[in-house]
Amino acid sequence: MGPKGCLLRYMITPWENTVRILEIREKTASIASPIANAYIDFSKMTCSVVAVLTDVVRDGKPVVGYGFNSNGRYGQGALMRDRFIPRLLEADPKTLVDEKHDNLDPFAIWKTLMSNEKPGGHGERSVAVGTIDMAVWDAVAKIAGKPLYRLLADRYRGGVADDKVWVYAAGGYYYPGKDHAQLQAEMRSYRDRGYRVVKMKIGAVSLEDDLRRIEAVLKVVGDGKNLAVDANGRFDMKTAVAYAEALRPYGLFWFEEAGDPLDYALQAELANHYDGPMATGENLFSHQDVRNLLRYGGMRPDRDWLQFDCALSYGLVEYVRTLDVLAENGWSSRRLVPHGGHQMSLNIAAGLHLGGNESYPDVFQPFGGFADGMAVEDGYVGLPDIPGIGFEAKSQLYSVMKSLSDGAAVAPQKA
Image (tube, rainbow, N blue to C red):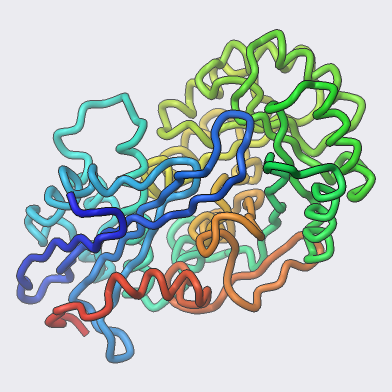
């Protein structure tokens, strides 16, 4: 294993007349920050950045797909190197092709990545696969010459895509020395930038202190419907119920992840004490976990929100299965607002008709936020009309990604 930040390359030779992956590169990037939520701090947080180089040429340049994993789970370069990248590059390239579209087949690629893997125990490998999957879909959309959200709408929603997506500003982290005035200034800046709903962290201090923090923010955003709170899974049953009863009068946009993400009994009991909207799901990584949440977690499809993040949960291929599970259980896709604050989820939201997307206007840069020049207006943001996920339209992020593909020894085969 190379040192942190070392560029790691895996290459194979071209295969005549087959759309194929030539090389996969991964490097670990730091997104460290002194901020904290109720459960973890981000002082040593990393993420993996991946480039998938193909033999296809568009506009005189080889097509490269890019991906990265969302914050909160560390970079997964070791797993990629040990299992997933070699497994993919050792496969017969012809088995990875979507002949109908003369393109790579993300579902066949996903099946290859997960070959010889036992079911269950999703944890870290779901992040490794989800990051590679993101880069694959970026390449697929670029090969097709379409923005990813348009490609998804064409394949899954009869060609109808949303031209803008509702977003909320996630922040309000605990920070050394951060007082109520600084918290208010942060939330005011989000509102000034076009966001209507903001989110803050709770659970790292006493209930009384958190209520004072909430009331300080409400002085900025006004009605409780403009504020969501997130406990990041910190509470036991007694504490979760105490918070629920204290939060109820505020009429908040949602009360997020009160207890452990797999404690479905706690989530179900909480619904007996809190009639306002609740949200959870960012730490569930498979469609099987989602099915169990809907069966046993007491989530209510008329008011609650689900936050599954494709980059952490085996990627878009698994996300499509998750949407099928939701439909089977009577849930609208509009009740999904993914965690992660990245352009991949934004494309999925627009192309597959989700309810919105998280946004990180100030933290986890350059990975947080959306395309340059895409201003948030009255809580909504648009997408760039360029092929792929749109990373090239976010200059600071693209400079990080492009560094992976610079100097690539690529012999293009497909034009």
